[in-house]
Image 1 (cartoon, rainbow, N blue to C red):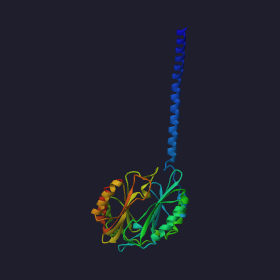
Image 2: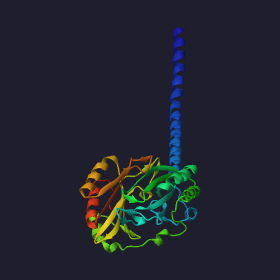
Image 3: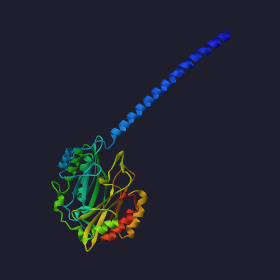
Image 4: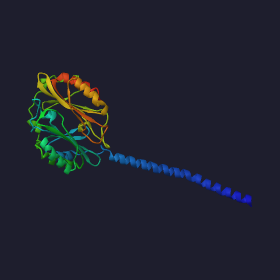
Amino acid sequence: MKNSGTDNERTGTMLIESRVSRFVPLLSLLFLISSFAIVTTNAQIRFNRGPNQQKATPEEWLAVAKAIGKNGSMQPGDVFKIGLPRTDLDVTVRGVRINPVLALGSWVAFKKTANMTMVMGDLVLTEAEVGPVMWSLQQDGIEQTALHNHVLDESPRIMYMHISGHGDALKLAEAIRHALSYTKTPLEGSATATLKRRAPEEFDIRKVEQALGRSGKENSGVYQFSVPRAEKIMDGDIEVPPSMGVATAINFQPTGGGRALITGDFVLIASEVNPVIRALRENEIAVTALHSHMLFESPRLFFMHFWANDAAVKLARGLRSALDKTNSAPH
């Protein structure tokens, strides 16, 4: 009887093991199917959240331009940008009157993401305008990411307020327009039409481009260069295109006799800051400010503003020396 019981137990165990062995592959298959479904769903979620999956229609940007009160243009990276030069201001630096396009160019840039619009910008303000503009933007949910100088020894004193917002494009535009009402920023039409143009041929543009290793463009008497970084710039999970203010900007304003005023800002990571300072100083180009423009960017960026008034080609060589210290995208 004892042996019979043992045999029955063994038989029962074998039956259970057999059933389990048949069931395990089924469990494995179900697990694989479930895992695939989860991964697929997550991938779809990430895909649907992708910042470049939806583009704004021309009608949407037309409504934004109408709300701001100034026309804009499409820039690389599906960015709609509106330039707002402070042609109402008469600013001098060490006795030299500066073209508003050189260093007084307010701007706002909009980019449509999956389910909202991102706006970034830089508002050029007098000291008296800073408080009212900041209050207005805060009331309407647009954040300030920096407030500082860009140049030195200017008269009157000018401040630069960097802004950032996310939400409905039209509401963002209306909020910015409301804030601009506390300034004398020219709107309702093309402000650049009032600028006095000075032919950039007052210095040899071709030699400047050769020395700098970049091609530029003329804008209302100022010759402008934009040099993007090689790596992607992220704000959270959104890629920020160079046209939204994360490219090195270099501006030349002719001052006669082959000379030019230069200003702009280098966009740098931490390890590049001091090598660029040394390169600029070695070429007699002053560093006028060093600071951040953003809050949550990756990699962390520093913006270095500069100034000089000298032979244009000489300055271009100095700027090229500084650019060579950065991880800039190839021309």
